[in-house]
Length: 531
Image 1: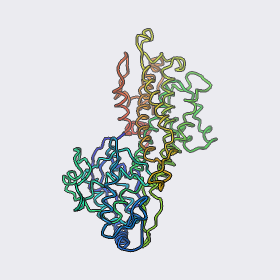
Image 2: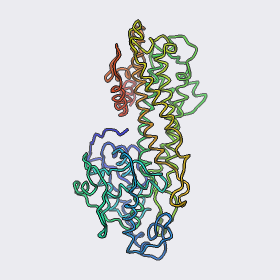
Image 3: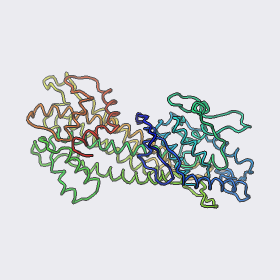
Image 4: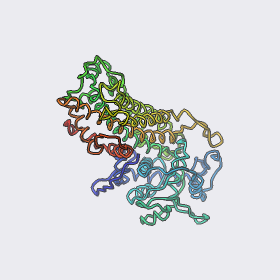
């Protein structure tokens, strides 16, 4: 889900990229809040030295892949020094094969920043001017139109990155046409050349290896994963809040969250979730009100189910933080030596996305089970069937019955999307690239799954809020927990209590977008006295 940009620019704040210290929060600030970025001075020196080395290699007799040779199966074909510029331009043109709907603007902006940070290492051999023009796109709100399909994430996101490169690269004198792709200038879509001109930016002629450097690396896959990690953290926190609301509405048993229980099985995520559920339900009169020995798994095992999600997310964030600060094209320069390898291969990103897909699908499954228990009369601890407000008219009124249907449908879809994509590989480039990671598809599916998850969690919040209102009607002397009470009031600002049947589609869509900003988390944290 693309977050609405606030476009708050600060002259005092600037992300300085050096190839080693970029963070996920900085990427979000640039991608979604339009913060600017610049190349650090120490990195600029390294980049300049590497660019000089590439020029020397291009003029030498020694073959270096992609500098003075062809690409893929044409690696054995030598390229004359005077043809190296044509080689870069042709690479871009031949790789413009992306199809499908475009990536969201925040994804494109994140990818531009990550690619620039890759070059800041000084291992790629590009000129500082190339990094500057990438950062100028961000500063001037020029966002290339990048088709989202057609990449294996293997030799990098070749097609998407070529579409990016087409916007900033100038045509050569003998080009039959000036193909510049498309780009948004601010919010208007036009040709890449028109967008660059509108922003007073000059396209550059790509030098030796620069076409290859621009396209080699799983950069769009990484950008998608970065933003997915940020969104996943917020979604799981909201899922915890929703779970606590459901727990109270169902008069859950608090013993399952006893700290001694979780310290005896000390998985960090499990301990953390149990602690947060205790905080959210602090001072609740609803827990243990039914005198049950214990609850069904979907309530009793909330820490054991959501805890591993946090542990997995921590691992994935470590992987993606390493990737955004890595040199990921090929070949790489180390001093005067160019070494050809496979740092462009997207396997780490694809596998990490698959891990995260599986765990987040489980979050949706848990949330759907809570929705089911709240609406089913035989599992709701005395709540009216389908949470109708007038039980004598049940049947005439359907209550919240259909919300569980939508949650079930989205949950089933997520279970399909969670199927690991990195298991699948088809060889390309006549077998030279004989095992591909399918990373871009894995992360695209993760993004689709995330969008569904927000809606499932939003449905649970809506259903749990209705259930809690009905429970408090039946138990007027009881009060919810400190955190759940704050969450309930927040939900009621956007979704009203339903006395009669009415539509919910707009409520689901609106609430899923609202909670994705992190506002619900902040409201609850404030109520609990957290910073």
